[in-house]
Length: 354
Image 1: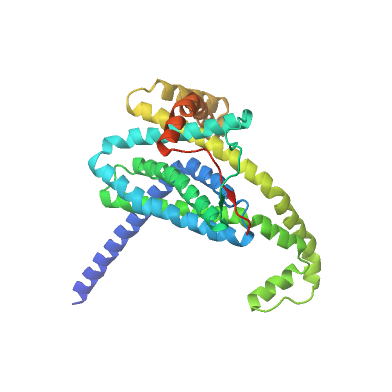
Image 2 (image 1 turned 120 degrees about the horizontal axis):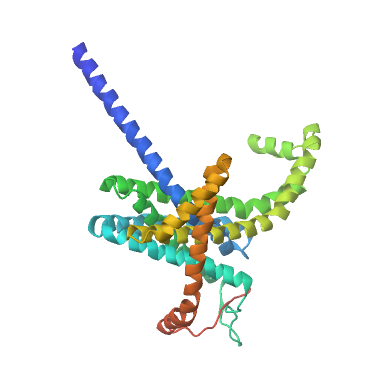
């Protein structure tokens, strides 16, 4: 009886080890897939805050929550099943679709660079009285626009993840796609929420004269007391931090936008280079690899970071060139065709006064 129990416990321990190894494997593969999609994640975090600009402070977090929910629906209800179907029925299409997404990223990044260098006023509205819409309709339009943009970026994230885990089993692919989708959505929109509310937190810190008492009162569930010695000691620090947040957040958002643009072109260019290698066109990839390796040998103490920087920079140059070629094509061919299909009248809308 005891022997049977020991054997059972041994089997349970073995199964537990297998399960733990599987969990570790899922975590490791999800981490690798998420790291490959880091450039798109940065761009997603850089793009999203603009969708809450101009709204009242109390509407910012609800709007971000709605966009995050839409992002999860994009990934789990539409893109994950499509990716699994693609893996089953048309695995050959993964690389072309990935390259197509890379081309889109290159175009978006190059267009942002072009717009920064030479603003072209393409967003000016026709003269005349634009139709008014309610604040609710305006918010709905912003949310839906953000979710549509997220769909494209999410599709690229899922495609990169699928290409990373293509050799695993069908069910493990589904699990990894879900883990990466949920994890990156939480990372992006949690970060966006912190970014958007940082200036409000800064205003509160800069104006508060009793930070320690207020924090203690919040934990006790009561009102804050009069300023104490600790308040007077920490007040200069918290107020300086608050002012730094208020002044620094606009600068941070600009830097984040620049990093997001750079991430788009280097990720897009890298996807195209690797895709070409898949089809036997490896000259460009080898040239970038040799250049990065030579730079690493020149600075052996920092070889890894130097090789990464050179590879990213060279991929970014490729991405910018691809995007620059596409800008006139999209502007003069694709955009007019889409406008004709949509029957757009080119008129804008304004918010009705509340």
